[in-house]
Amino acid sequence: MKEKNIPEHVAIIMDGNGRWAKKRFLPRTFGHNEGAKNLKRILTHAKKLGVKYLTVYAFSTENWKRSKDEVETLMSLFKTYIKKEEKTFQENDVKFIVSGRRENVSKDLLDSIDYLSEKTKFNKGITLNIAFNYGGRSEIVDAINKIIDSGEKNITEKTFEKYLYNDIPDPELLIRTSGEIRISNFLLWQIAYSEIYVTDKLWPDFREKEFEEAIESFNKRERRFGGINV
Image (cartoon, rainbow, N blue to C red; front, side):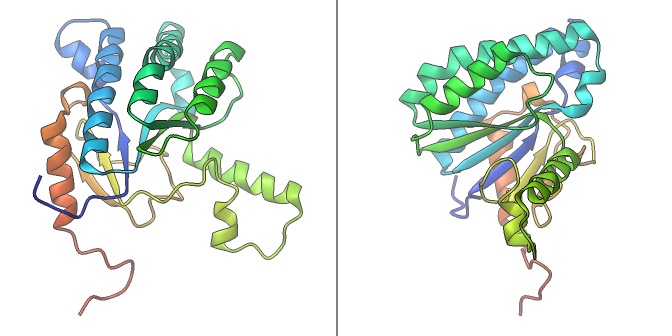
C-alpha cells in the first residue's frame, strides 16, 4: 500500500464468527475455525506492512456465559492453534504473548500458552498479543490489586501502566468487525486515544484488502490527543 504511516500497534475485536456460520447453516464451531484461519492471514499481512504489535480479542471474561459446548470448542481451538502455529511463529519471527486472567483456564492449556510464550520470547518481527479470558475492567482491577500488594505510593498513569497484563504500546488503531459499534470491555485503559474503525464485514470475511482499508482510514485521521493542530 502507498501510505507510509503504518500504526505500530493495531487491536482487533474479531467479531462475527457465529453469524458467519449461521448464514451458511453451519454450527458456530465452523465459524470459529474459519476465524482462526483468518487470524493467520491478517497476522502475516500486518507483519508484511510493518505493524509491530497485533492484539486480538479471542475470548472475553463474559464469554464463559456461552454454552458449555461452545466454550469447550473455543478452549480446544486455542490449544490446537498454539500447537499448530509454533513452527510458523518461529519461522516468521513472531513473538506470542497472552493478556488475561489465568483462573478457570485448564492447566493443560496454560502449560501450552507458557511454552509458546517462552519459545518465542526473543522474536522481534511482530508481537501477537492474544486477549484470552480477558476483560478491560478485570485488567484494571487486577492492576489496582497488584499496586496495593506492592505498597507503591503516589501512583501516576505511567506507574499504573506497569501493572497491566503486558508492557506494550497502546494501540493507535482499533478495528471492530461485524458492524457492532461498541467496545465490549476491550482494552479500556489502552484505547483512550485509539482511532476506531468499524466494518460490517464478519471476521472470517475480513481479508487483507479490508485490513489495508482500515489503515487507509487511519491515515486520513487527524490525531490531536486532546490538543489542537494549527
